[in-house]
Image (cartoon, rainbow, N blue to C red; front, side):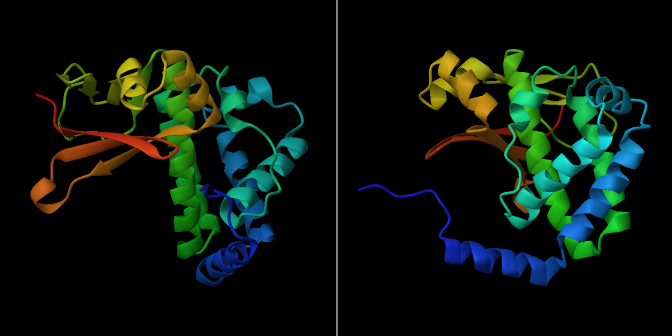
Length: 232
């Protein structure tokens, strides 16, 4: 017995209708958001040079990114590129993704109504986490983004079971994750690059405050590890 992973067309229509009803997102809003974002990002001292080194046709790039956010935000299917392949060669790391998210958040909150901004921001965080995972994996580790602890020194670190914690985030030994997901190292890298392997960070609340669960997923498989969200 096999189960299709594709979304039923009727369900897709209902999902998109619900998104539009809740957020008011349409193609015109997406274009306003994309143009406003790049108007800022192009002049940012950290991420601006990365864009400048790779983008020569800005109108063409903006058109492509409108299709990208339309596909992600409205399930339109307009985008047909490979974001992971495009980002792997770039000289970017955690600070670049953090700054990208900051600019995007500020722009979305200015350009979009609150429900639409939240929808885009949730999507942006998933995209950033996925791309950062692929780039870190290419370097031999897996870095999971997390909020920085108050008052921690950049030199403070805590290591447990292949997980290293610093104020820059979590770094997980890639070979360990590959083993837990039943993949060879080579197969693991390939699936990370394709976005099939990805990670999720969940912060504890209430009795679990101060703890973080890192979950890595590959198709129907998953592996989790829980660590303290403090440096010692």
